[in-house]
Image 1 (cartoon, rainbow, N blue to C red):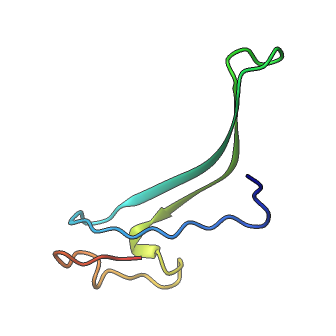
Image 2: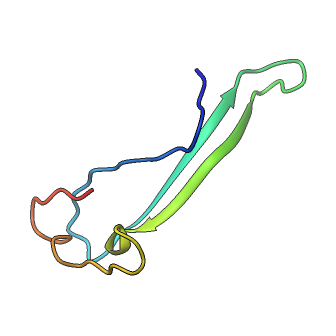
Length: 73
C-alpha cells in the first residue's frame, strides 16, 4: 500500500465524561529481516486533541458534548 499526502483521521464517538483527550498514531510496520530480526515500526504521524476543542482552539464547544447518546465528530 502506498500513502501519499497528508493523513487525516475522522473519528465518531460518544462519551459521558466531562472532557476527553484523544490520541492517534499512524505506524508503518516492517517485517523481520536480516537487518531487523524482530521487525521495525516507524511512526509516520501522530496527533492529540481535546474533545471540547475539536472544532479548533478558538471555538470552545461544550454544548452537545455530554448529551446522552449524541455522536460527535
